[in-house]
Amino acid sequence: MPSAKRARIGVQLASVRDLIKVQGLEKTLVELAALGFEGVELVGQSGYFGKGVPAYQGLSAVQIKSALAAAGLAPCGAHVAMRDMLPDNIKETLDFVSAYGGSFMACTMGAPRNAKPDVARDWWKRMADDFAASAELAAAHGCKIGLHNHGTEFSPIAGGPSGWETFFSRTSPLVQMEIDTGWAVAEGADPVFWLRKYPGRSYAVHAKETFSPGSPGILGQPGCGADGKPLLGVDWPTFLEAMDADGGVAWCIVESEADRTSTRTVREGLAYLRHLGR
Image (cartoon, rainbow, N blue to C red):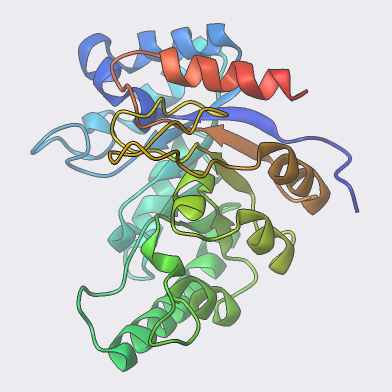
């Protein structure tokens, strides 16, 4: 059934990582709010903002909550390290996320490099079981957890199901898909197919255009790859229609890899979504 309320528009802070390094989180949040974003997806991996820099740049949950409140932005999610999502570690992660008002977090992961097919399949199955257990713990905290794709998750394993399919066909329905449109399309996967295959399992999606160094990195402008050939872009009208029909997508999160020193690419991405009636 169509969603009664369309997804809100947020932005992934990885898109402006270098700007945050220069002017700090609080000023950057105010700037993003002024553009019209309603929420931000925080980055909670240690080392992401520089070698030796702790998770969340070493900011406390109180400092993050204060900065969000000052800008009038909601915490629409957080990207954390995979190890922090596993059952043995998730309690501490949940305590921190809950303390600044967050209720969703996701991570990326990939099977061991060059693993034999049986080893890769078993790894995905084990992760599916671990995340099912973590999702139960998260639900007790009023939080959702999910898996965010890059590209290789959609590659078939020895001609069989991909890691993504192996994972989501086995894990708990509580575990969310955070589909990254740009990475999916670049790998030859159809994000609309996955939304429809697992309806109501996508609390948040990443609105990102297919990207190659030198391409615009702006929604609706896939540009060309390093070889000069046009990149296959995301079919945005079809994806957004499927997102609305899903009924469970609370946040559409804009991301760009093209220019992390300013808000330019995410501003233009937001303008494109507005052009499409978002």
